Length: 198
Image (cartoon, helix red, strand yellow):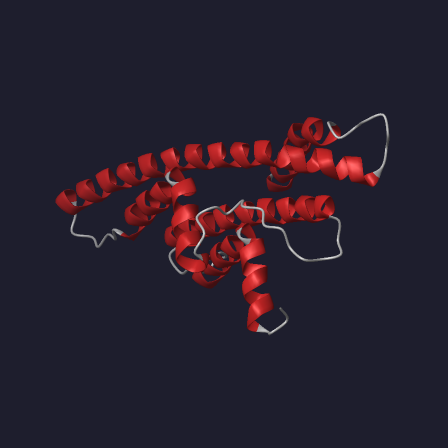
């Protein structure tokens, strides 16, 4: 059953993204025109994933409030020990998802001194800027997905009693790694200057 759901979700994702990626068809079939059309579709995909994170954030906040209700009923009805960890994590991660653009801007301003995670800066390379922009946009999209996945792993970690399959270390790695991928240009510049390659 789980394999069937996994297969179905990949199929739905492929069908949903196929029209966006097939939009790259043009009368001249060369790699450069494909990359131009692909990089033009990244802002739409970015908005779709951001909207999905808002929906997930609303659901998590509502589930956190429901867990608070259960916690309150358990405290008054029984003498068992219950923890506030689950509702607090749900509400906190839900708030992060609801304010995801503001969270990116604040984290980017703190780490790199720029508030735009999608900011394009010209780099001195021999690579075609169109190719660089397309690859950078894809890496930033992967960073956004990794960032959201890290927070969802944190929620899964809070729900399982012993940490479970999704440990806090994996979640933190996805969150930090996703943040650096979101700011791949600034992070690349920091690494480039740190190793004296400028």
